[in-house]
Amino acid sequence: MANSKYEYVRNFEREEILLPNTWIVVRIDGRGFHKLSNFYAFAKPNDPRALHLMNHAATYVVQSIPDIILGYGVSDEYSFVFHRSTTLFERRKDKIVTTVVSAFTAAYVLGGDEYFVKEGEGGGKVLSMEMLPTFDGRAVCYPTWENLRDYLRWRQVDCHINNLYNTTFWTLVQQGGMTQTEAEEHLKGTVSGDKNEILWSRFGINYNNEPEMYKKGSVVFREYALEESISRNEGQETGKAEESAEIDGEEGSAVPAVVSKTQMEKQRKARRKAKVVTRHVDVIKDDFWIQRPWLQS
Ligand code: ATP
Ligand code: ATP
Ligand code: MG
Ligand code: MG
Ligand code: MG
Ligand code: MG
Image (tube, rainbow, N blue to C red; front, top):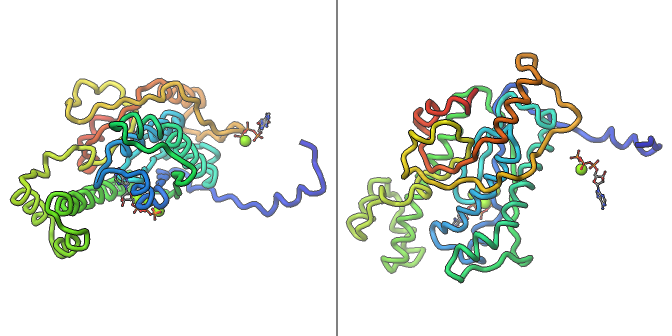
């Protein structure tokens, strides 16, 4: 590109480089989805079509960015964990966050009609300019594996607390005939045991039998050899985005001294080929991680 006298304006640009050797988490969240979910008439509290669409978009993101080891999603949010050794975009924060957000949004919008209209019983509303889904995003660096584990625990515990509340709230409204204000009042000061009791004694609902996707959220990751040891009820969706193009860093990004470039390239190739799956499993305890050592290494 030819130089011009205007080039000096580039000096005004500022780049934030994410701390090296830390686990980068990019969390995206739907903007105004409370309103959007009413507009598109999501079933309350959990519209499975909307969750499947979120998982579809997350699968595309994980498939197209090999440096992401895992995604964790609940409601209108998804967290994507980059391996601490990633050099994608030289760890430039703006590039990483905006690429994840726009890749996710593009897949969400393109998948909208399939998941929303076709998966429903003919009642789904087609995505329209009147209410386009948009997402915001942020990146946070976690210096230790334990910090990262605690981050994911935080999100999954949040999922549990919110889902128990929402399930009880909407059961009181939909089956108990309460107004939303009455239900809110009724649940003030209750602990989780009380909510389980309300569900069971008044509506015959055993919270434990609620779908795993609602109780635990969704984990999207590359599965290698462990298919056998994973029980059927853990969920079964498989990523569809297998042929998607890979999002690549540019300009020969710096490679850390410990891993050779050929080794890295091998890893990337293996990751590109591995099957991306969605499971609704516990990531709080150690089992999930012990069974899948490649996620950390
Ligand atoms: P903000 O822009 O600040 O994020 P928001 O309206 O998106 O505002 P959130 O706290 O992100 O607020 O909450 C998302 C809301 O979207 C939930 O409260 C819920 O009402 C709705 N929602 C998201 N996913 C689903 C779903 N699968 N089924 C039903 N409702 C959903
Ligand atoms: P990066 O991800 O680094 O931005 P890039 O391939 O997008 O890589 P750019 O420097 O942004 O590189 O250049 C965009 C390229 O897209 C152009 O070089 C051109 O080849 C192509 N392009 C963009 N818009 C058009 C268009 N309207 N018609 C034809 N080609 C286009
Ligand atoms: Mg938000
Ligand atoms: Mg939101
Ligand atoms: Mg949210
Ligand atoms: Mg470009």
